[in-house]
Amino acid sequence: MADAHATPRAPRSHAARLLRAAGSLRLGVVLLVLIAAASTVGIVLPQPESFKPSDYLSKRLDPASEKALEPDALARLARAAGILARDEAVETLTSRARDGALGELECLRLFYVDSYGPALGRVLLAVRAHTLFRSAWFRVLCGLLVVNLAACSAQRLGGQWRAAFGLRAGTEPGWYERRGVHASATRRPDVDATLAAVDAALRAEGFRVHRRRATGWATVEATRSWLEQLGRLWWPLGRLAGLGRLGSQVVHLGVVLVLIGGFVSGQLAFRHPQPLEPGQVVAVPDLSATPKHAAQRLATSDWREGAGPRPGPVAFRLRLRRFEVRFDRRGKPEYYGAHVALPDATPPVDQVIEVNRPLVYRGYYVYQQSYQTDYRRLSGVSLTVEKVRAAPDVRRDAHGRHPPAHVLERFQVAAAPGVPLAVPGTGLSLRVLRYFSHWLIPFEQTPDGRMTVGEAQNTSQRFNPAIQVRLEAPGRQPLVRWMPLPFRPGEPRRGSSVAYGEFRITPHDFRPAYNTVLEFKTHPVLWPVWLGCGAMMAGIVLCFYCNHERVWALVRTRDDGGSQLWLAGNAFKWRERFRERFDAVVAALGDGGPAPRGGC
Image (cartoon, rainbow, N blue to C red; front, side, top):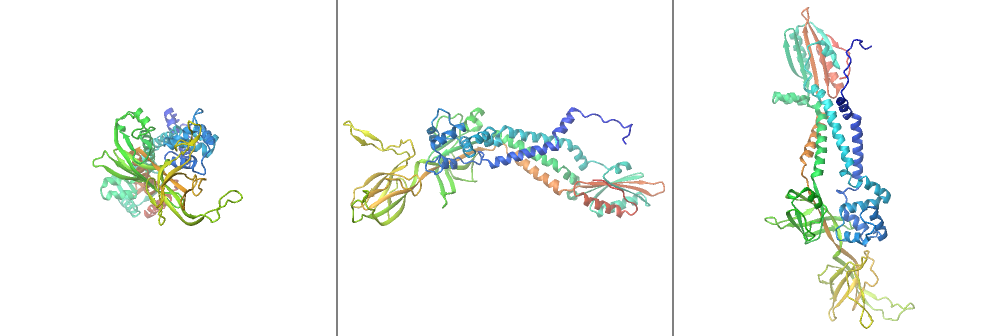
């Protein structure tokens, strides 16, 4: 029964109740679960940092792809994603994608409605799932977690600090009886002898002992921790033994630093993906001398020289010398790297930017992000050259077709644009003169009303690749012809074969050129993140590997010349082992035994 005369507890203030609610363990667990779930979604769903627009564009917007979208389907998805207005034609979108002017976020929005359907895709876009780690609601969750950790630390710091460095040994027996683990004993020897026995028993269990002597009584404070051994090097370092009890505070501090550092870095960081063709030059702006509102516009502008005026001075210029991409047998990219030059540097710098090997220059990190297929240019074409002999019977069959020619030899050759190629052992040479991605042969009407074939143009409304080749062989006049290229490898189009004397040349595949996508980034405030990571690691070590055990003892003189002994102690971790060690200390003192014990 409670004491009727007990002093009533003072009511908590509103600030104290608010602090207790903000530092609630349940609130912290709920916030951690929500942040973990959101982070998992952000890892599973494509984000700007992990999404490669070139892969998606080559699969869904590339006319040569088997999974290419039809114009009507593309227009419907683009309007659902909000990147194509109602009055805009789908050709506007495809031309922007072909020219590398389709933004990364626009590609990502199109990917969401394409992959998850217009209904679910628009819901995901509405909740900012495609930029989850930059969304306002995710940052609010992280801010609430910071407040919760700060409030939790403020509530518990005082008690943990006292347990680690405070709690001097009391001079009243009641102080020891209130400890979770305690014992008392009556001994025959005097105070000095009892004090020496306590000292020996504690040291035998690995404790470091500090005694305080006064007339008629003495106290003992003993600690046991591997950090206590630092006192052997310099005695003040021995006071660090209690740091293990503050491990949770150090972890909280590390988490807060990481969250704050990540938020500040995300706010101040700058990120700009820039497509580049070989030979083009990028004028990288000087962000330190550019106003903030102008810097925001720079993130979505085109930095290539000649693409338009840009505000602010230029930090440096970067020229793409060439871009190299290699594929394995399955057609998967196994390597791609950009060979760049810094013409303004003294001396000029040439470097290869590869995946995980960025160029770091004047505050910028230039990463090799991805690559884009550029069907406006040609890198190579594969042709089949057949040496044939006409069949002796040249009469047409019942369907009016000539009998097939007999193939004597067949060669597979690869030609590069503008480079003469000699077919081995045949005397035939060929050269690719021109390449049109939207080949069109118009019909023109002469003044006398006749229809004639006009000059080839690159103005077709649909993707229609073709090459103009020049064929030469000994004893024959050179021949210049246009050859349609196949839409899919190994499927020659009708009318693509050219007969030249005893040879028949057919294109069966071609390789478009590739443009690189370089990402220019700044990392302005990273030191809080690294400091926070170090603090979290240190806090985890303190929590799990720095046990702190404390024992206090009070010895008083009795009227009969003997002494009365009180012992108490607690431990931060591994409390059952500490209780065994405490019982061993009590048993080593002889008379008396441990009193009933509670939790540490």
